Amino acid sequence: MTSLLADSMLQPDWPVASRVRALVTTRYGGVSIGPYASLNLGVAVADEPAAVAENRARLRTLLPAGPRWLRQVHGTEVVDAAAVAGPVAADASISTVADVVCTIQMADCLPVLLASGDAVVAAAHAGWRGLAAGVIESTIARMDVRPDSVVAWLGPAIGPDAFEVGEDVRRAFVDHDAGAATAFRPYPGRDGKWFADIFELARRRLRAQGLTAIHGGGICTHGDRTRFFSHRRDGVTGRMAALIWIVGEQG
Image (cartoon, rainbow, N blue to C red; front, top):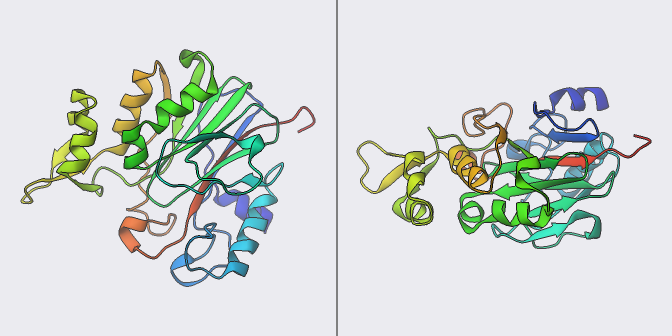
């Protein structure tokens, strides 16, 4: 089981220190059924609690310690994962401690993983609300390192051919950064509606903070029903996880 689960994971392809590890789960490898099939990791959906517990137990076998789960609220709060004893209201976490697993959940929102050498890692949940409010900026500030030392990886999220938004979303970004208009294109035949490129919006925020090493982006959760949960596509669905940690000296 562990081998099959491990084989289903996405592993970022990015130039990070050898002691940095990261994984992104898919739908594969769990016991949930129906719209949550099969590796649903979310406790805040209507899946059977026993199934979620088993799914989380299976994920734990691939990690050095239990994930530090957050209660995500689409905000900008960043916490130290080592201090998280139970779900806290936050949308990002950082760690400087070996084998502490920063973890976020998603089902269309963008996971942003960050690493500065093997000194500090971070995971941010960047839905459009959090992204517009500054979750990336808050996470980088909390890492407290030179921005040009940080490597970023953008995980699976709803893609630019599926992410329909209104004028309010466009204005939330363009009012902050006029150049963000390039990340929106009109929805044909629907006045006031746009397709948004959340990957490009995140890249702009990262570059504005001084990052130059930005990887990933472009994997669409909405378009791949087999591999990914998608809230926008399905409504009732499960949650995946993006995880990052620093390997201990004995790891």
